Image (cartoon, rainbow, N blue to C red; front, side):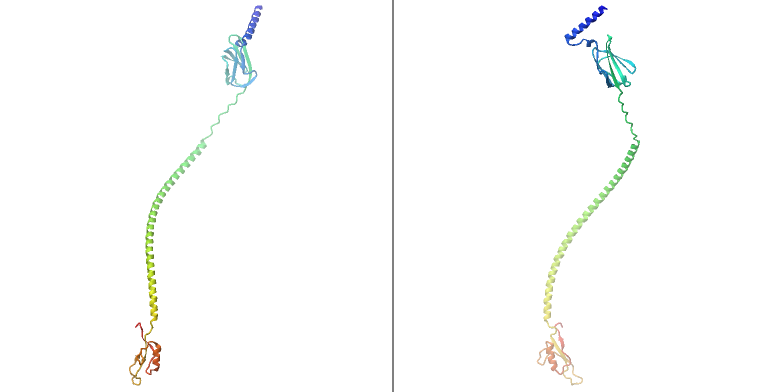
Length: 279
């Protein structure tokens, strides 16, 4: 007993001297210290376990009413969710495979319940949507065919309008040529009308001069009256028209004729025109 106590004291003294000399503890070489998780920590799986000291160590997990040996492990060690079937207090133990319980450490911690995994959204019922899309596609196809038919009809109408446009263009050109010809004829007719107007004015002037000359011509150039030279005979002598006086001057106006007739006892009529310039 005394020898064991002496060995223990010598060993302790040796360790103390060595720690002071190298400014480090030899205890960490033989006795492990759990660093993570902290004592009494509250965490959630997965749980990371890290210790300082010898490697590797025998690891055990105590909790949920049972002890589970995890085998020889190296630090750091990660414990998956399967090691924590329910929330609660757990204890992690590490010990030396050689020294056993003489070189061991433990740490208690709480594990929260795992976060609920959101369930994947249920696949929506696409049958109604697909049916609507099918109806829409059918309607669009019908509309496309209708538009295609209208496009063909419009194309044909366009071709017809192009032909009519060509015909109208030709007709317009012909009308333009006809208009130009009509303009030329109108210009010629206007020239002819101007010439005819000039000739008409000349003719009118000549006609006016002729009228003035005709107005200056007397209506009657010879006057006379009926006379019976021998009215005492039975039957009377044959009558004759007297157109001059006894001196042989022809009656040029009615006044001269009347002056002679009033003094002529053989006169049988009034004076009248017996010689016109127009026959």
